[in-house]
Image 1 (tube, rainbow, N blue to C red):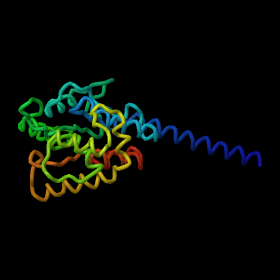
Image 2 (image 1 turned 90 degrees about the vertical axis):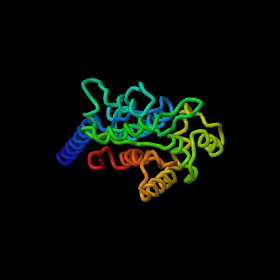
Image 3 (image 1 turned 30 degrees about the vertical axis):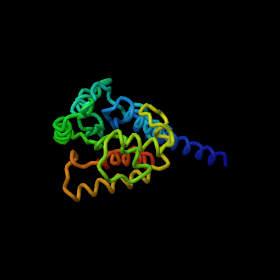
Length: 239
C-alpha cells in the first residue's frame, strides 16, 4: 500500500513537472508582435486583449508585444514594426506580425493620411519576408467598436462614427478610455459577424481596401487572439 502511494505521488510529480516545462516553453515563445497607428485607441484595446490572455495563462509578458510608437501614418507604422529590437529579438522572430492601420482620408481641417501612403503600407507589408499581416480599417479603427452595437454598411467618416459610438455606449466616446474593451467584449460575437459580413460584401464586389468604406479586417486579428484564449497559443497553424 505504501509503495503504491509513493508511486502515485511520483506520477503526479512527474505530470506536474511536465506541465511546468510545457508552460515555460510556451511562455518563452515569441508569438505575436503588432504595431499600432493610434497611440491610445488601438494600443489600449490590444493591451486589454493581452492582459486577458495572461490572466488565462495562455501567454507571458514576452509572448505578445506592441512595438514602440513613433509614427501615425500607415507606412510609418510598418516602419515601427520593422525597427523593433528588444533583448536580441526582432520582428522576424515572432510567429505572427501585424500592423493596425486606418485609411482615414486627409481632411481639410488637418489630419488623415494620403491614399498613396495607405496603399504603400499594404503593398510593402504583403511583400515583406517574413510576411506582415494588416488589420486595416476604412475609415478608422472606431468602426470596429461600432460594429459591436450595429451593422453599418453606408459610407461614413471618423466624426460620424464617434457620434454613433457616443449614442451606442451611452457615454461620450473617449479614445483614451481604458474601459472600452470591457464595455464591448460582451458583444464581440456581433462585431465579428458584422465585420465579416461587411468585408465579404466588398470582396464580392472586387473593391480594394481604400475603396471599401465602411470596412475593417481587425476581426481577423481578434479571431486569432480569441482562438489563443480557447485553445492555447498555437499560432503557427493559423497563419
